Length: 434
Ligand SMILES: *Cc1c(COP(=O)(O)O)cnc(C)c1O
Image (cartoon, rainbow, N blue to C red; front, side, top):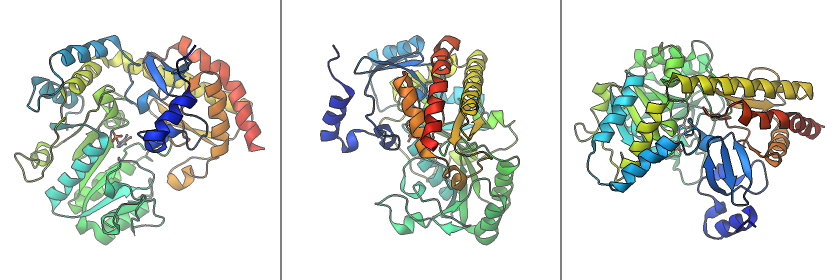
């Protein structure tokens, strides 16, 4: 007998935690039903408090590249823990992790470790403003860069709309410092620079967008961002918190062919191996504007935490070419099976990829190039598909706007559960369209 059910766990949590969760998407708000409370995870599987096993296609939203609780990563954290949890003083391991990052992305000449992706992007933007002496930031509608004030800005329609707050609690003057442009819109970004180029500190982008479903850049789009920012003295920030060290050893930047040289990168998720750790890196000249050498302040009691750093080092050392090949193969098998099942069931859909990441837009046939197009997907069909798979012991992301994550241990045996369950899930999605 299970000691507790998901229902009682959710009720208990909801009494003391807003919405019962510590990060909103976990609450199943867009798919309905009771969130699964996780007891433990191993390899490709997670286990809830009811004792049920699920094949996991969330992977902690990205970090679990090697699978959950990889023995060598766990051992590295245990060894570090026994030596002390936090010192508030430098450790050699921090330089080792920074070196591992730089070895993969050599134009990230210097690296600073922080605790979350939100902190990394927030710091990169402060750095860009400090470096340029300008205030305006350009971001793309549908790109997510964490939850700091200036980045939670609603998707504005049209060009050069001064952003409106996308959350209560954000002062309009702060939101107004963010200009929101549609992703993949060459004319819109050119127009923004033509109009306000001398006031723009930076463009921040997901170089392959993965937080509105997967929306890869059109050929030449990232190159255009580099051209425009260089021509106008603004910085280009590649937010690789999600894609970094996941879609290739050197992230999207590497997969794209190293054709674009951003001034700054932000990393998170995989780089922390499942522990609270993220990083920013970039040209030494820009990075050295950070305190204590430069005038741009940034700090953190737990920055470069020894347990998190140990997990990151172990993960990056283990993530070799064979690991990326396995992740690519799992993604290819799974995405092909999804397409086949949905096609057989007559469900209109569009599957888009960015390296090994993919997502499915239900009810859409043509390409999805931006957030407005992504929003035309049929959320009800995803809900039906999601719950059919959940009942079959497969955990998809509880939102249609998220990527599917596989790991190096999602082998054929693990994926066979999904392959078997897909036809019924596709029929459930089909039925919801009627
Ligand atoms: C997850 C994510 C963030 C925020 O990272 P947190 O660690 O959740 O604060 C920032 N940018 C991108 C692209 C992300 O996917």
